[in-house]
Image 1 (spheres, rainbow, N blue to C red):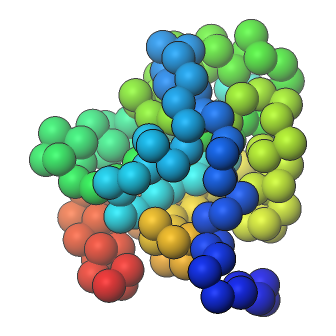
Image 2 (cartoon, rainbow, N blue to C red):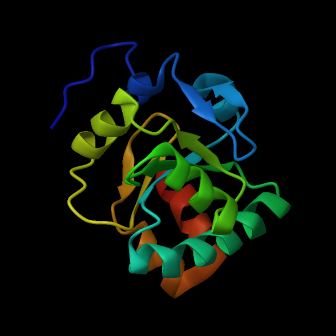
Length: 156
């Protein structure tokens, strides 16, 4: 259990961090997430067959929610072997979500924070970083976009 001090958020680890858009442009995390209520951290890699199977499902899920203008964002945290492999994976089958730069200290911090021991893994949190579920992958696969309303309800 992490102790949060007054005025501090569980999302402070993203403070001032630069994230990448699928097109390679850089955004500041706070700006990109300012109007989002629910954030999914997607831990995955191109070399992982279960990841290759789940990523298109997640991309469709994300696309459906974005079309409905739901306050949702995904941040991809790569376990790819190098930045070129990550870029190829993003182009191949990822949604138009954000990602942590390959090899950035933030990627290791997030893997530690959420105790990621296997991939693919989808961790769902509120905008202040409160954990909603570590089982996002299963929930997205089984329930599809309807699960988002459950996450929103839990976040209130």
